[in-house]
Length: 276
Image (cartoon, rainbow, N blue to C red; front, side):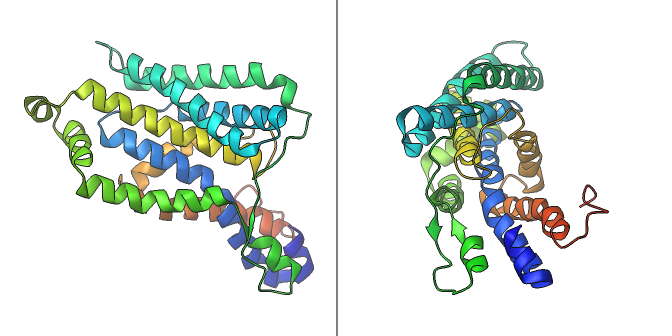
């Protein structure tokens, strides 16, 4: 990282902080989407495929139209389409959630790789960044504090989702369906409808996470861009105990952990890169 090289050891915490702000957004969007899905009593392991499809869709549309924000919307819509498929399949009789999730990973990844082949080389317009480091005269600080509006949107969604679950009627319906489906059914709540909507909304958020990967950080499209972050985010939800605000904190932790290796490598410590 440039800021680490220029500042020496003082640049290591700066680089980790920058990596936390930049690398946590995909974890955040996917984990919030999975949190919503699991609150309704379902699990969506297919979000890795959704993340890849969202990344490819966003990059392709940004390249073809010149509008990265249109690419973000398209990524969310692509995620919703995969969510509809997953939501319908996973609620059929004698169908296992995990099996459907694995199938959706293969399907979503395959679609992304097949349709994304023409867009590996071309450069698409990237999402803009907000210069939160403009107060500093150090270019390293200015670079580290370039923050994507998508990250801020994800940070805002976390407390809103927490409030939604605790204080709204629909939040109560979702928790009832997830905690006690029989009681929810007795209340006249459509279990199929609630779970379908939760899976679609969760997949929308995962698609947005994919758009962040391809249009901001790292800001390119290739078949290995997700690095398994979709699957890691599913585990992150369990680590966060199915609480949206905990998902935010855990995402920052995971994003910062990813930045430790590159930050230390840039000051000459590369012996334990893979350990970090």
